[in-house]
Length: 409
Image 1 (cartoon, rainbow, N blue to C red):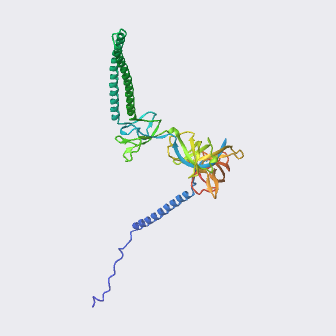
Image 2 (image 1 turned 45 degrees about the vertical axis):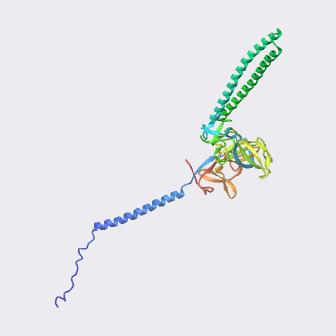
Image 3 (image 1 turned 90 degrees about the horizontal axis):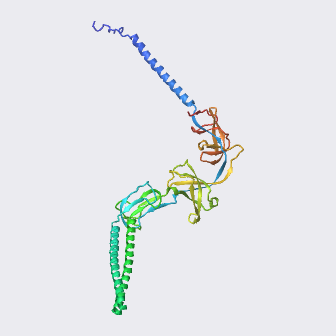
């Protein structure tokens, strides 16, 4: 009973202490993290503020006054670049291709050999014709020798006949023999001429086995290969080629467009034209009307017009798509408020109006302008600008009047 009445033992907690150095270190780590986070937040806020308030960068170009005169656009049309001289070179005979000496893109001269055909048959015909001519020439020589002898015999017979020794029959026989030889010689000479003609035919057949360029130009298509059969007419089976190559005279390149017959009265010969290739939309090419074809297409109600380039360029290729603008009469440029020329990129549309942004003292100024004709160097501004004004040609969208900007260095 005494053991049950003893009070419970208390645990000694005096040994549970927190080291002061550990408490300080833990407190220091938390403060460091808090201050570091605040620093990062402040830096991010400052960077974001600078990015938001940084002036946009723009590129500018100077407007300059237009001198001389300008032309108004009367009519637009579209068509294709086409050469006046384009030919698919074919053989004059049916034969097998032995050599092809050209390839696409090769420039050739007039008379240059493009291909050679198998001429073995023509060579044999040439050999046969020469043999016939030689044999006939040999016969002709024999007949001439016999004629010489017959003429001598005729002279003797005439002498004997005059002396009363030879009869009239003998004289007539010798005369006939001489005349017969002359006739045979004439016939044989005709045969020699015919044999020479056959030799010329055989030579022509040999020449036809060599295919030459009819004019100078560039090979744009190689249509036959070695070993294939070629023929001037289609064989119908699909295994015989009808052409060797296609040549284009690049110096004869021009534009062909169809103009609606309702507007053909606006087009005349030698009229100035501006052409723009679909492949190079920013390149305006000066040209002029060469001729108006004097016939209309009743199905399309159009008239064909051919246009010549003022200057050819290697970038202009056959069958390229092209858009043309027919220009009107030359008119003097406006003097009051001189016409300015600016890059096309400087003109913007805003509320169905044409405006430009003028750079001045670090800010942009909105200007409403009146646009004139489009030229190779840019767009005419008839009103709203002065000579030397700096207009924005490249910059961010959404620039407003009075916005601060920086020039691109």
